[in-house]
Length: 184
Ligand code: AMP
Image (cartoon, rainbow, N blue to C red; front, side, top):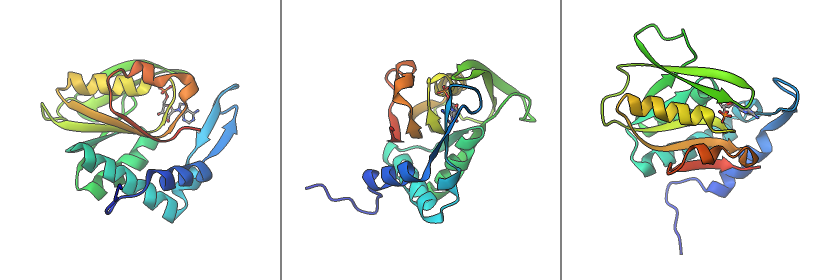
């Protein structure tokens, strides 16, 4: 028998995510079905359960730092980091960070983009987890992991609310420990 102590059941969190996210067709461009998490964020119970679940994951893998990807990744990673008693590091779109940065460019489901982080944000060997709302083609997450490893971090895992499995993002993340709450 498996006994879960002080942790949130993955099935319950999955159902909360599935019932509190909505599809917006053709946003931001024709053919894309955008997964909108704002109804989830607006529900204090659902949002709280999700953050507790994400914090559990951080504790389970032994993270010491949580990395969020701009912008929706921040909304999840910062409270999860706080809940787990960990620090938070933002990966930002170009030109937003004031200090000296490292940059990584990548392809998106819709377009192309780059991520930046402060070059001194990570102590060499730091055990980090990357968080974002959606795993789609995997380009963003792969770029984030590359950037962190260039900075000397040890990427323990990646955590997403939603995985769009038909877009094959996992293929760009071989060997990574990936946790996705809900795969529609
Ligand atoms: P990708 O690099 O293709 O895995 O795209 C992941 C990034 O783009 C994440 O930061 C998501 O927030 C965003 N994204 C990509 N596709 C979608 C989608 N269908 N709905 C919501 N966000 C998406």
